[in-house]
Length: 592
Image (cartoon, one colour):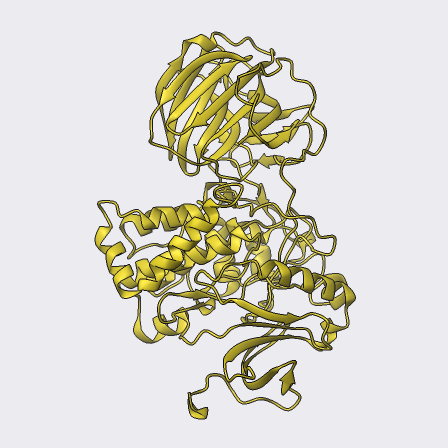
């Protein structure tokens, strides 16, 4: 590569010329946290070096966070990502060294040549899903996935700029506790919530995946190209425009762009669907791998890596990454590079639509307030953040003794404890007040699920997708006409065990359709306000059920083989009982 072919712009006065063993060659870009340089190693190789701003470099809290997040990012396998090669958090100017990816960005390609062809589009979808599978599997959230951060390198697409340090707002002045910042056009709706709200989850990256693939397929953002306030309002309140997308990709993009993170697939779920050559896409899969043979290798490695983890596919529909020790220096919100400031006090709440459980109840942005308040949107890309997560196997409090202890040999009596949660307070399961769906998930000595209208509702909880497992939980029906729902092997589809006053039945749940497949007469009637301990064991194609430790029936089918365990509510078939419908759950244990 000659000097005339080097990417980037010339170095400016004041730019570093040497950092450690790396010699700066040109400037690739800059963002709110610093600048990115093309650099040369002593053996003549090229790398990208991200250098943190001088004022942040003197902040001890930032340095600690930077060090912690670099360590996490180093754990990301280089499946379709720019590999982290080196870092020096203790340098006068902390810096990070990543693989230099020689290829145009997706935004450049689409702008110059138009939307991608079918095979290239499918390859892009697989490549970005592969990258997110690796990123989320390492406990990292990208937070700013967009066309500028997807490089179309030879062999397979590469996702860049993931999971590295965000600023402590209290000490840098970059943002305040009443602000939200981010790149608006590809932001998930829950990211417009209050800064001190619940932490973001990997589901935000899944939303961005959907927007990126829609852009690549159509040449436009699915929520338009207007000013930031208008796009933000559409993201919160309007469906995406997916004209030009069809088949499997349209289906997956629609799911990824769900307003509620609970209704989005996981990165691994996306990858699994994209790799299965069903009747609607075999030629697309074959063509994608024919054009990009390295893509198949990367996808297979990502699948194998996640299969080898303790939990098969970590970070799921509700979007939690795998467990990681809490870092006292890691914050739970984000500071990206494009400023999108919304004073919380000025913005009334706008409900986020949801058909099921999810972590986010409300997005704190008003249509009028958004237009009036947002003052600037500066697009760049440099550094991102990692969030702390609760560790698995450690409940928020000691489980209380079940009213119906698990009998030897029943589900939960053997195997390794994976989750133990008394469900008496926020822990692996979260509270929620969903006014749009007229439903609540709250804690009152148990997880109490209430619905003021007909229809199923799922509460946000543990995000791991499991294949073989057992689960036991105390169930109580609180009002007539109510049924407790225990979803299993569920992502966007799966099974649901309905526990009602007149007995229990197993059904499949696909989109809005619940189809009974097996009644369980051995469960028998379930009295109101009486604790019943329900057990489910899934091993291969065989699923067995117990009530209070006694056998209650089996089901054998291979339709759904992996997914989450979800708790929620349904109503009895053809019930004439008026709402509210209410059930509760307590003393949950999952074993693997």
